[in-house]
Each structure stands twice: as structure tokens, then as C-alpha cells.
Amino acid sequence: MGRLVAVGLLGIALALLGERLLALRNRLKASREVESVDLPHCHLIKGIEAGSEDIDILPNGLAFFSVVSVFFLPQIQQRRYKGI
Image 1: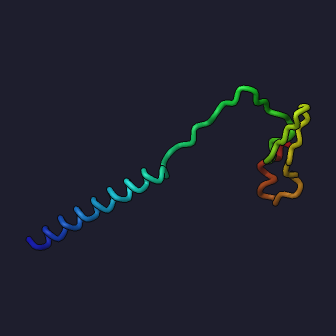
Image 2: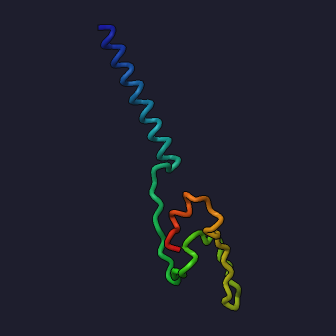
Image 3: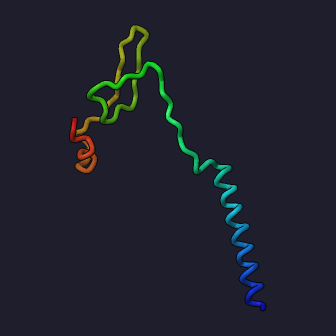
């Protein structure tokens, strides 16, 4: 009988601990999905798929891209961009 009570109390304690962990996870928004945003005037530009990090557009329409060169990446990452 004592063993049954101990197992029951252990189960209740684990359920309370699990509930608190789920509440913390929800509060930190750890399990949310990031929604994609469709911007109306964005176009894919060929040749900068391999790591364009920053685009600066001047008032006259000229744009500066900072792009990572594929040739300086390690061999494992180069396999991802073999189409370029």
C-alpha cells in the first residue's frame, strides 16, 4: 500500500513539473513557428543566392550588395552551392 502511495505521489509530482515546463515553454514562445512575409516588390536576382547578407539602396536606385564568395567557403558548404 505504501508503495502505491509513493508511486501516486511521484506521478503527481512529475505531472506538476511537466505542466510548469510547458507553461514556461509557452511563455518563452519556444515552440512557435515563424510566419513568412511576402513583400510586394521583392524579386530574386540571379547569382546572389549564396549568401547575400546586406543590401543598401541609394536614393537614386543604385544598390550595393554584400555577398559571400562561394570559393572561400569550406568544402562541405560548397557542396550546397554547386549550381552556382
